[in-house]
Image (tube, rainbow, N blue to C red; front, top):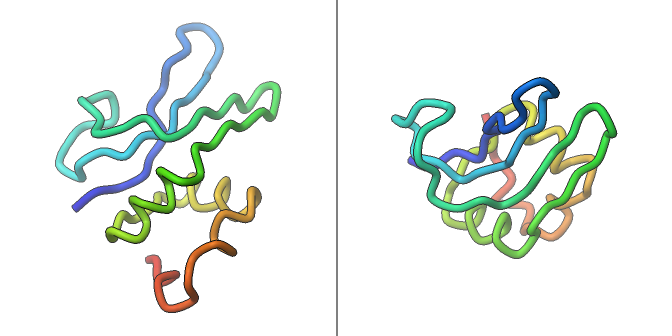
Length: 87
């Protein structure tokens, strides 16, 4: 199973990549694809929406924080309503 989750990149200042990663991998493990970027200090977000939609249609589950970021960016409006069943 694939999840969309945050992967920390910054050393002093927390900066995160949004990645598609296997559930069994640890947070800093090898990712399948980098699909976005999130900087909480500057409140800046970059999302590769076509790739995110591809993974969501294939059954990827976003974590809580990533799901909130995707809702804020209104990514879920582009998905059919029957595919929006997340835990």
